[in-house]
Length: 523
Ligand code: GLC
Image (spheres, rainbow, N blue to C red):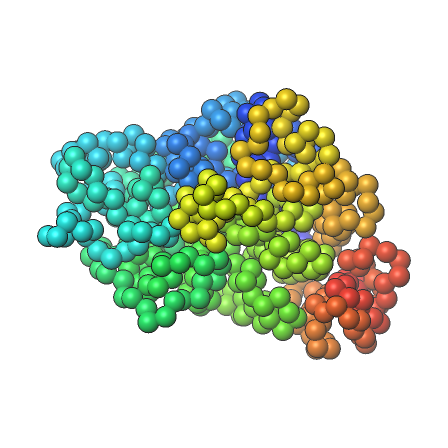
């Protein structure tokens, strides 16, 4: 176990910085807020790394995923000094810090784009993708934005369209121009030199596009998205605007850059590709991403058979020596407490923390914060404004710490939080759940502590074993994990000692699973 790199044994906790802890009273979370909660993360919860969604200077058209300066901290989130204090606090507690890297696009307020837009012959014109309109004035091809509408925006001044796969305030960088790669790598080195331990690469399979910008074929029927519905976007076969083979060249270069650092730096890529063979190609020959995020459990049927099948499929395609990863929730998808149902949350916790690979846990899921319904007209999320059901505000509501003013998210007397708290915050918060020995939070703590001291969970093989219908059971070396996805009892023929029960009581036995019970059995 001790020879494993840290990124294999560590559980990562994702923080959406606007929503974690506000220290200034403006209703928006900030970096000092995260620093003030490090004891919670390290000692109370017991995670080993945090990933922070973007905190760089940004006009916030996509809440930070529109970066106007890759080597800065937006004043809304604090200062560079605040960042250094956060990093120091993370390291002092033996944790790791992963930051978000957004290479596919910059904000249209980035100085590079401002120059690029200024004239057709500006030296930075080619840093982005500019094309003439079609003769009828329409966009250069049929690509559409992941947030709906054309993926092109016309610049009236210079009479050309620029490519923007997300909002029109996010212009796609042209990675076929070597100067772009050089500039982006220089900015990445800025953070690696400062000591960050890893990067989460935003839309890592979008970076390189078809050089001829060919039209995507339209599908006869809508594709089934592996995550939430993307409306019109799912009506196209995305042959030319994402998943281009040249992405692998970029990822090999990124890996070489990361590998030039000591101690080891790590990368995880956001790769939404339903075809698992293609998805796993982003491991390369273990010379590209350390691993791609695996989103396949997010919308799998929440049954023993449905989940078992997805795990086996992922285990099969991860290359030898490669490391799996699992995610159930993040800042783009409806909250798991609402997606799976609250009674399934203990089972989801045990599943996530006992599979082989790196689990990533989304802030607030440890107390089962539910999805908050926010109508389209009130959504701040650019995607939600266009397509209500795709809206992401509902999974980004403020963290619920206690039952004091604004759930302890903001200091007393602060402005209203940037998004409303979930309705149930007074009864559902960290303080309340710490007091309840059988709360979900205490289950997460027990599972995280168990995992930390278990070589089998950190490094052991995964092997699914026979189990009665409704039960998913697998072995991790000397441990057996048995999960009951049904609301009835299930008899088991297992022997051994109960290591953890999701009921957190003394009544568990390896011979029987109670409704929705999960067990770790030491055999
Ligand atoms: C990724 C992010 C999402 C963002 C998009 C564009 O999918 O997770 O929040 O809107 O990229 O940067």
